[in-house]
Length: 225
Length: 225
Image (tube, rainbow over the protein chains, first blue to last red):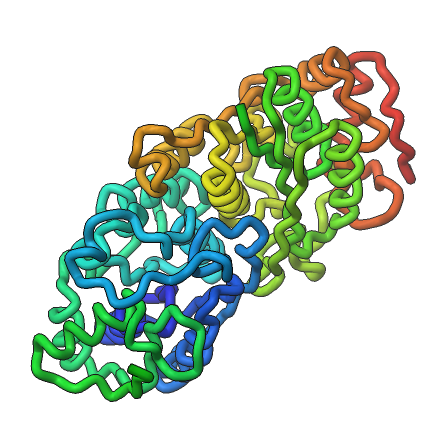
């Protein structure tokens, strides 16, 4: 069974890739260079895809700085730093990229239909960072309807199925799952800041570090702070 | 009221742009360079956007030849030629590009949310070329749900509304509407073949020519055949 896996190179999507392989899928990875501040993650995606042994790894390139609107695509918007987990969970953060998962899933759908894949895996998670609207179950269901109605394969009754193995997991549970699956954490990249060493201060670093700390595990990545 | 208009440079989307302006919208055009065989259409889009007086015209660039799967993105798949209107309407044609409108609408959504637009206009049409699954009303409704659930603006109750003024019109009726609105047909481009002069043989040329002929109007474009 063929599956397309959305792979950013982060902790969540890397776990999802290993889950797809554990599920017995012939795995095709897709990553996106959208001129994000943290394009460094693409090197991680490349290394992880290679290590995991995917059939193919496609990197789709476009430029979301055209209109910006997010701290991840507009250098003039500052990244939040040193926020508590509680602060992070309160509002949709400035790192929200308008329609990002919709764009990503659309390309994944095009790729999946072309290679006749049955599944798409995406590492969305509705618990941590619940501020992002395009990580919630009702949104995923709406995209599933789009897959069913908007493609030839879907109209023929064989819509690509969206799999979200992490949607109900906490970050600590994702790390536990990844440990069982043998995810190479040292190759992953979560930091938003755009440096060559993880900053340790942005929301993404802090959420990751807090989860490793809660589990009394050490994160093998080096951090600037 | 701000609106984003998907503008390919063809007859339908140009009519839709003029409709948006007639509806009183402050219009922002978006076009896509996906390495389509007929990238020539982008020059038409540019000229029409300029002539119509849009506020801004964004061209998003990516490469759907990465996986191909369509006669429009894979030079090894021949374009159908000299088919009758009846032949065209029977199956999903090889010019179908997997998930194309889903990709286009996703980018339009990102752009619309960033500039706080209220509407997106798209020139889909369920009658002619009804073979394309992503031109039908149920698909558009599913995308509307995605707009509502997958964006910050949507979650706040102000989802961008998808407008499809051509969805129930025949090609002849679109031309009549465009004539009322003053669409500059001479600037538009419909041909799929990739030449500098419209071929007159591909499905898109034939559908267009048949509609002008039925109305006893002459198409101001030059045709090779």
